[in-house]
Length: 116
Length: 115
Image (cartoon, rainbow over all chains, first blue to last red; front, side, top):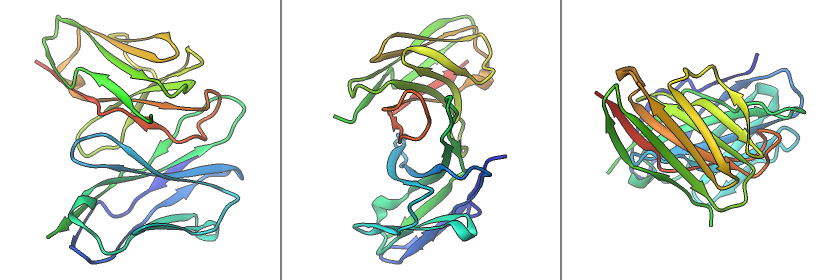
């Protein structure tokens, strides 16, 4: 069975602190994709990153970085020098590559509050 | 243009009303989705249209009826809803109509209240 776990339900940090959001996934497939989405209070989910199972290279985009480790089935997300605008719910998600369409599995989300 | 638009933004309807939610994208994406999201929960998939054909129906009650008039438009027709159907309804699209490997682009959602 496929599953995504985000053990941190809510996190609060003070502005400029670094914060890491954890994501652990389960799948028996060898080919799959992992995603992170951000949902600010306005409601719209915003795509942040997609990573396929064959690419374990870490990625950095500005203050955001992602650490993908197949050995621990984790795809963690770090925000460096957090800002108030980072306050949102963050979802990690998993999809498999199959011949027929299948759905994306979302984790339960982590609510991040950045306090000024 | 990576925009998915949804109308209306807010909708209040009675249990006997009929209403429709609309979604539009002009990115040439071949898959479109309806999700339902309750407070403090992840989006819950309702329907997927792939190349304008319904490919996934997640056992959604028949009071929700999707329609895909063309590759850019997606509607969700609502009839005889229950108060527990109150939620944020999100539309999304992705480029690949065959698999779930592409990122999805979401609209701002319609916040529905059933009275």
